[in-house]
Image 1: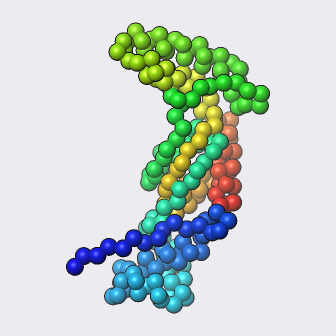
Image 2: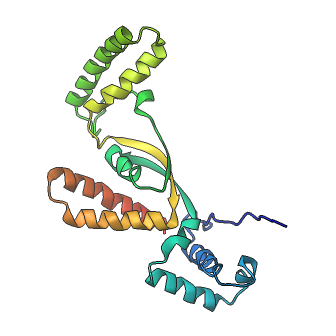
Image 3: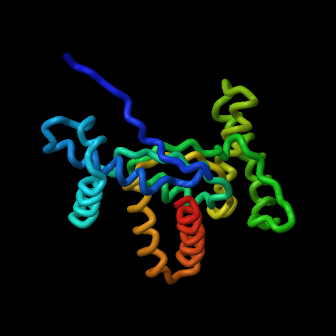
Length: 210
């Protein structure tokens, strides 16, 4: 008879940071499923020293797939658009990002956006509305507005901050951090150095979350 049971894979401490120790133990037990005759429920009760040995072995021999069983949901605020694009280019993930089509671009003192960028944005936002209306007369005013805003957003810096909820696995977020560290070391051009600075800040955020 087939049976299923939902296993906990959401690991947080009381202070809201990631419970690394228990996440590793969970993955270490899963790593034993391939050869344990009695299955996962037996592994849940095994001596913790056996689990720890398996954790060390999987980490050292690059058998990291067991760490994909743990999903982590990040609420990321103030991330540069270009860094969000980097994250959304690396599988596996799920993302829900604040859309440029529903967001007005305005200039404020201290903003990363320059007055010139906002001027260009406003100029082309109006022009895009005209062009969309001419080419798609059946579109509603709301659809014309949002599509124009989405296209006009290309006139502002890709370092403009955005907000996203980003979900990936325990393994993948560590891989991404590792790739970012490699990028930071090799960054040379002004663009690369600016992106590297954002990557450093992101890694620092991960470290704070344990």
